[in-house]
Image (tube, rainbow, N blue to C red; front, side):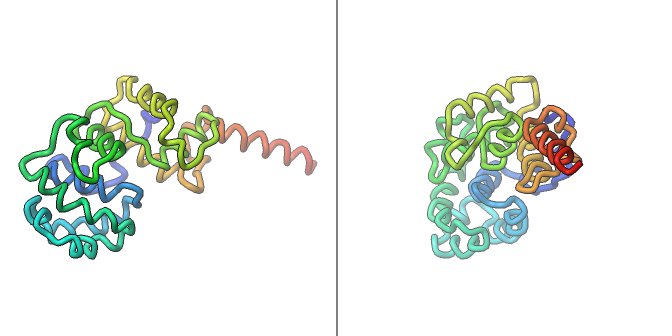
Length: 212
């Protein structure tokens, strides 16, 4: 489904493997329910202000809240100093240990393990749910991303021999840039197998017959 999509079209600084793990985990918290372009605009200034995990760990919550106010969801600021304190000596290698960290839930854990540890795991955001719903032809809502059957399906996708990090980035980029809120179906090479596109085509044929 996604093996033709190339992640390098989308250059985000946290995808640089030379960036320290603590910074990339903090970034995944910032990215949760937030537009990646907005985080990219903030990235340089935020980590200039907090160049080390220790500097973020010692920052007042009110100061951190102000530093990330442009992203919305400012409640995340209450977790960031504590999280930085916990990972100043290193980020855990296991999902179970990550889940114990302040502000790190299932999505951030899965995203970090897949994208930065290159390990098969499960992470699903609203964009990926929309992509899979269209492609496979199921109805979805705000709770679908938590359903076990969907998480099992995403697990199965990662078991097809793809490099986890590359496939994870492909899902994120494709669901945002091609299969977004206004899908670019005509430029999508997956459209011939897509239930959503098949429905569009059927509706267009029916409309054409009605107008003939």
